[in-house]
Amino acid sequence: MEYNRRKFISFLGKASIGTAVLPPFLMSCGNTAKPTEKDLKTSSQILDKLKQLTIKGLSPSNEDNLVLANGLDYHVIVRWGDKISKEDYFGFNNDFTCFIPFDDKDPTDGLLWVNHEYVNSLFVSGFDANKNENPDAHRTKEQVDEEMYNVGGSIVRIKQTDGIWKVVENDPHNRRITAKTPIKLNWDHPIKEASTVIGTHSNCSGGITPWNTFLTCEENYDSFFGETVYNPNNQATHRPSSYGWEKYYPYPPEHYGWVVEVNPKDGTAQKHVAIGRYAHECCTLYELEDKRVVAYSGDDKNNEHLYKFISSQPGSLKEGTLYVADTINGKWLPLDWDTQPVLQERFKDQTEVLVRTREAAKILEATELNRPEDIEIDPITGNVFVSLTNNYGKNDFHGSILKIEETEGKYDALTFKASTFMAGGEENGFSCPDNLAFDLAGNLWFTSDMSGSKMNKEEGPYMAFKNNSLFVIPRHGEEEGKVIRLVSAPMDAELTGPWFSPDGKTLFLSVQHPGEQTKDLTNPTSTWPFDEDGIPKPAVVAITGDLVEKMNKLHLIEKA
Image (cartoon, rainbow, N blue to C red; front, side, top):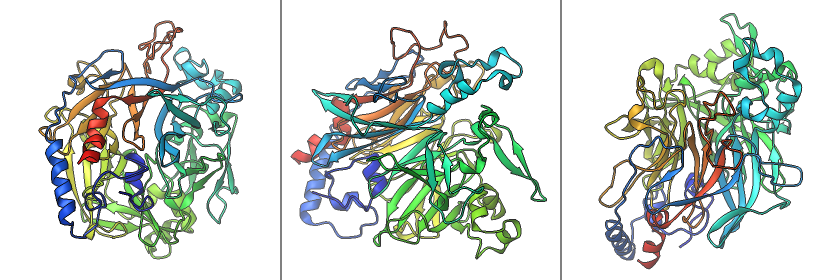
């Protein structure tokens, strides 16, 4: 069976790009066609076999290792500092991953995109903020240059041989996108007198387009060049960054905080102004029947918002309407200067609305949420799932997963129903949900994002969970609906960017910031991945094994 790869972009990206293995009536959300008798018989055979699957999960662990449940194995594909070409090496703190094969018929050879979100200066540039009460005074330009190189993203060709994924050395596709790469603004009006800006950074999660390009999202952009802040009289001041890059490179903060599209073939990139400027965790797309695109994105900060962009032109992210969610009343509110008099009172035009999206959302009284992070679309029901990681200020320590049901299953609908799919906490066995991914069988996989400074502390709310982990909620079988821990991260680390290979036999996963709490390089808090130098290194791993295949149900379904 084949599916329309342009229709269900979220599912294709986080679950598969290739040949479908589920009956079409189960896989296409919003599909109201009546299943045939043959479909029903095939589905019944599949579900009967799914019930035979049992999964033995892990107990919480504080071991400094990547600990996997029985039936899983892993190997490192690429780590910080690895050469990817004669000129470039792999960046720091890898986050979102996305794999696109060269040929749909060969799922073992293609391009891997990896985000590099931020740097730990102690490891990357040798700058130690703990040794000076005024750290910016001694951060050198050379140190800033090194840090700027280590963020952004990497494109690497990877190939699986004898079950092992490896980088194809010096492949012409292998390249870096950094904080010094010139990138065009996909907008008709300059922003701070520029139509091309310098670099991308703070790259957290992302997505994939119907035309097979990568989306990488600039999240905590204010950490590097600060932010422009407006008072009630609309007067602007500059809030300094924590890294202090603006001391040597006074780039406008308004050039950052966007969704960035990267062409995997040549590395060219553009920033999509129409989707708005805020701390984008991800950008998850759905293509409508007329080829217009819907893009969901969350603002990963306490008391910020959930957004949806609906393009007005097919195959484009340049023009359209940006909406913000009122989850209490179930309405998408248009952030449109032309039709919103209250926005005209504060902003001079639509460009300013998009640059100052957070302010505009507050003016429209959108619902404040508890750090909306990753967003994925359920391939079975079509519901939209949103991770709400936590909000200490509101005593929400464990977060939840929000479910959005668009009216009549239409993604360009302007009304919806919001409810809590599952709350974090000891009762459900997880805390602080972050990245989400659905596999080929519709099982929900997700990672946790407990702060390294708060994990494994007796006095805090997270002691019972120990290290961050990867979980799955099975859709069928004896464990249906249960939260099962499958992978436990090394010390201080966070697991991010889960992405399945097209055949469902490999889960690509980032191990981000192991040993992040290190204060002394001679005594790191983690030594994973156990290199000879003993320095912890972020890395992308391939998780394989019988359990991955069983969860994706490829072998069961193909025999059904």
